[in-house]
Amino acid sequence: MGTSGPGSNDLKTAEEPACITSIVDTVAKTVPKLRTAFETHRSYEGEANPSGEEMLAADVYADELLESRLGKLACVGTYASEERADPVSIGSGLSVAVDPLDGSSNLSSNNGVGTIVGVYDGGLPASGRDLIGAMYVLYGPTTTAMVATRDGVTEYLLTQGEREVLTPSVSLPETGTVYGFGGPVPEWSGAFRRYSMSVQRRLKRRYGGALVADVNQVLSHGGVFAYPRLETRPSGKLRLQFEANPIAFIVEQAGGLSYQGERSVLDTEPERLHQRTPLFVGSPEPLAELIETLGGATTDPTVTTRESPWD
Ligand code: FDP
Ligand code: ZN
Image 1 (cartoon, rainbow, N blue to C red):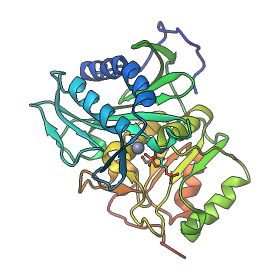
Image 2 (cartoon, rainbow, N blue to C red):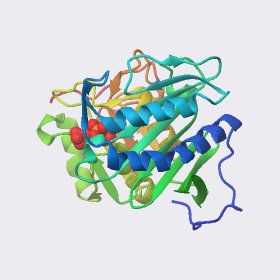
Image 3 (cartoon, rainbow, N blue to C red):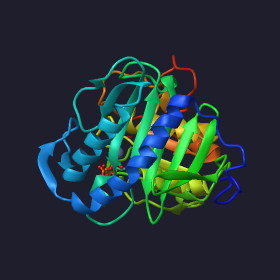
């Protein structure tokens, strides 16, 4: 990651289009209320979200709060979230796709959770190539935000609704030191198991069960995060619009690579708002090996070589 320390606001950060600034500032101002809600809204709602997962009261609260705050911004035309079936149309403007509480199953074990926001210049579902910005908030011992625009990635410390630059220009090292792979090993494909064996010889395992927290490890130390397709989840677990695209955008803007079994995640054809995808992101070297091992994929979107499923 970049070298400068906290408070280095004078150093160059990624240029933000005005709407991205309003969205990031709005999320930052909402963070204190969200943090408090994690303490007060820990029970289950008794309802499932559109992906069939049980919702916590905190998921619902975070979604409603973010919809009401982001929906007031003049530049936001559509709000969509993992917690509701359809996008909310607000008017003309950009589309925000939000995972209000990423890694919510970590609340009960008091491990890291996050919030993810993708800002698409287009109607939803949209291509990752329509992203003009993406951010995530990581609620760890401190609260930080990673903000990507087409100009680069900046990490902020969030305190009492304000943001302060921590790392002006986040940049992934060529190889790095950590890996985190989701899903039960017996459900991985043979090709992905072979890749995992190779990675384990060089990198150390860091997996906590929240996408934001696990990807933040990779952005901090370099390495690779993967949630591959599983035997019981042939399309993968993570949601393209709300999770995989924004994370892939942030990682690619930091000089890393993303992959979904055939091509960059950002080149995935958007078909449904809640569609899932395998996700592989990280430093260039471990990602290049992964792409080679999973089937010699290519950046040419017309070529569809893919991970052979269960060899
Ligand atoms: P969660 O179900 O707790 O919301 O969003 C899905 C997600 O968490 C990701 O944050 C995380 O990377 C993944 O699922 C964790 O899945 P496993 O429990 O299978 O590790
Ligand atoms: Zn999530």
